[in-house]
Length: 277
Image (cartoon, rainbow, N blue to C red; front, side, top):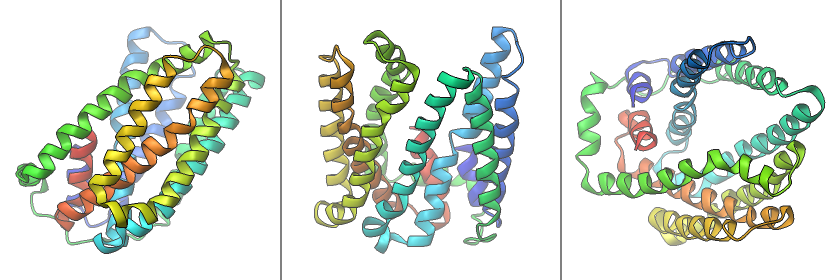
């Protein structure tokens, strides 16, 4: 939760995001030159440390803008634009790797990082009054038993998903997909994700944050079970429609819950504690 603590401790909430995107923008370009494998691992770890907290920090800014009373009904309508961006990136990157070479994705990633850097400059400078010694407040966040239980259950879901995602591309290759097809395989996933985020505005006020999380977990489990039965590309496209409902409902529910249960001055800390879990 380091970056969440930093964000809660400074007045200008843009600073942590600007630092992270600048480091990532330069770090990706460092992968262009041939390097020993050990150095590639080092750069990859650095990129993960600086890029991983970006989304939770942006979510904390969104929550601060909406407030707990609007989080359930409006968050999905904002977050779905991130899904559209991911869809465009997947299509462009797949096309570039097939036609311009595999290194082209590094240039694209670096360009996207610097584009986000420029967008962050347009965000408001100030937020809430910085939390005093925010790093000492992490136990305060974890002292909430319901929140700690929620973190544990969410961690199990992240473990299942994170351990499976690295094998998705090799799996798609194995069933006969080209690089461009792999990029297109994410199209049904993101389209359903956009629909899920849009409908979450109506679903969450009825079932509540925990209900949204539970529905997302059901769709996630069903998706992975069906993937174990897939042997041809067309069925992979079909099963990937479940991703959006799994992620969209789960993520919308978690954001509403975090916004409701965390103190406003520690919202970024709570977000990064959640992602670290």
